[in-house]
Amino acid sequence: MQTPDWKYPGKVLFSSLLFVLAGTAAGHAFDINAGVTKESGPFDLFKFGFKAYKNGQKQEAVEAYRYAAEKGHTGSRWALANMYADGDGVVEDDFEAFKIYAEIASQGVEPGSEDTGFFVNALLALAGYYRKGIPGSPVKIDLAQARQLYFQVASTFGVPEAQFQLARMMLSGEGGKTSIQQAKKWLNLARKSGHPGAMAVFGNLIFQEGQSARGLAFMTAALDKCSPSDCLWMQDLQEQAFSLASEDDRRVAIALAPEIYHQPE
Image 1 (cartoon, one colour):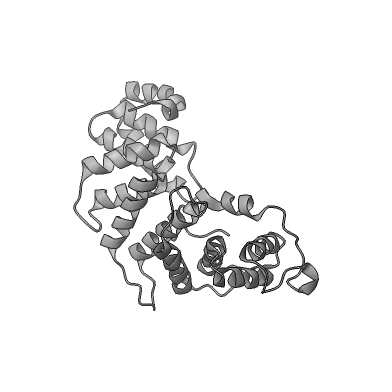
Image 2 (cartoon, rainbow, N blue to C red):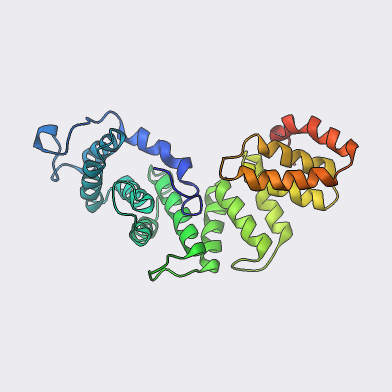
């Protein structure tokens, strides 16, 4: 279930939760012969829906997830929201996805709960929606709300993607004051966790501050880990810096880049 990064960029961080929770469910059609009905328990329905989805039986997956969601199963709600956001097995409906994510977020989460990943991901999804808005729906652009949600996930749960998005909003003054120093703090935390985007932007900032070799090294290292959707803008940053750097700084940066992920401050 892939989706544009702005919708819920942290989803990939929690996709493994489905595999852990689903276990070894049977992969038959959603009927009485499968041993699972709408009266089954929410976890059994969830397991069935997960296996059905993996087998390409998306209508059965949606049906099972809906029944499980109605019985309060958070993982099923999350999976169903993803399918609506992606138009995956259902007609794409961002507002429907938004409502389900909002339900998950409104429930909160107990410390150490197995639902923590779903809760955090729902907050990230909502932040993305508030940042862009949903055309034709009551959900309008609310940058202050998006920034607050990213801050909550970045500070409480330490999720690198939230730290990165929060830093970007701080750099551009979206939803609040511009703060380069605060942005650098969040970027530094995210890049220490190996976030390529944070590494590239952090490198660009310190390059502009005069740390040419080190900044270029960060940008160069980020290119080795970038996702296809992000490589282009990272490459543009790196190439621009490379063209401005001295020959000595280029050599130092190239030498530092392979070890940059292991460096502290």
